[in-house]
Every structure is written in C-alpha cells, then in structure tokens.
Length: 151
Image (cartoon, rainbow, N blue to C red):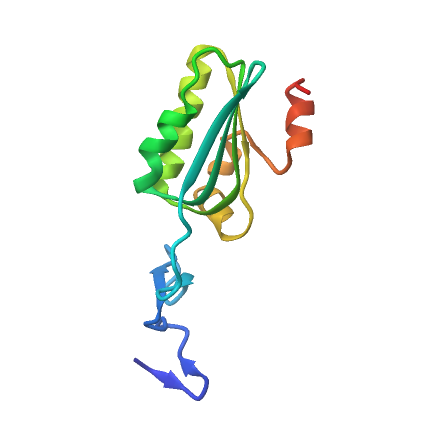
C-alpha cells in the first residue's frame, strides 16, 4: 500500500478500517468503523400509545435485523406509525428497503408513517440515495406530531 509520512494515501484505505468505496468517486472511501471496534447491537422496541404505534430502533439496522423490525412494525389498527431511528448507528440498503416497504403497507391501510431520522453516519444512506425526499423523515418528535395533528 502506498505510504506517506503520515500513513496510507487517500486512494488506499487503511487496512484496519472497514471501508467501502463511495460510488462514483474513485479513491474516496467511507470508513465507518475500525475493524477492532465492536458492532452496535441491534435492538428494537414497539408499543402503542392511543392510535399511534411506535417502533424504536437502536444500534446497527442491517439485513440481520430486518425480520425483527418487520415484526415489530406491524400494527393493523394504528392511525400513525412512528419509526424512531434517532438511536440507530448504521442503516444499510436492506433496512432502507424495509422502511420503503413499511411506507407502502401503511399507505395501503390508510395510515400515516413518520420516521424520526438518525444523526451522523446513519443518516448518510438517506442523503446518498435521495430517498430522503420520498420518505416522511422528521428531525424531532414535536414537529412530527404537530404536522400530523397528534399530541
């Protein structure tokens, strides 16, 4: 690997980091975490509050977590489904697919979906894919409830 006085060059990732090349940008890598750092454990919790079904996700929301998320998100009689991703540390394309599928299911039932967006690197996939213009994403709970006439 090419080296400079300060370490690996930008075109080659440091082998101690998990790195994926950023699409369309040769030599630019997304270094999400060091390989020796533990992955954040996925946790999902769900509860009903009146006509609102809340699903809170924390940790790494990836392909391994999709089935548990899908099960927790199902609620046929809710007027509003809120997915709270504020504690998510990573979201992959499979998880993004689950959110899109949930949007379709809630619309078919005549319900509304609202997603509290994550911060930092977990929010990156929404911006990268452009899906942030198509999913009902909110930065905070209060504007979400006010806009949807709840609370």
